[in-house]
Length: 161
Figure (cartoon, rainbow, N blue to C red):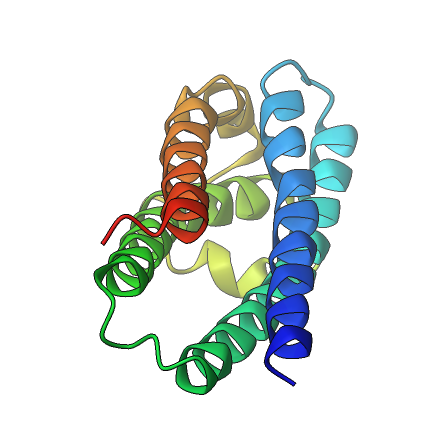
């Protein structure tokens, strides 16, 4: 049963990375897009993929925790380091990406973003879209996520401590 749980953990990780990859590619595509209707469409698609990303994250976490119990791995340092890196990456991603893309969604008038617009002072407008789209934020997020993911995979494969 342990092998099956590890498989579910890995599949959850694949689902997480695939869904999140959509958002990452859209973040870079938005840098070159200046047509407001296309920006709004891309932001809406990105929002949809984030929902699937959280499902993958939930599966990988639940199966990983269960596998750690089943395998008696909680005494190993690599598993704690992996969890620590995951929590740190999630915190940075949430703190850096969520307000930024929330502002973009509100400025683009993405359906459902009306409540977002009131959270930002000053309220973002369509005129703000070009400046937001040209931001270097996607590079920061890709670096944090890429380094974090590579570190976790290295820890899980090499189990150095």
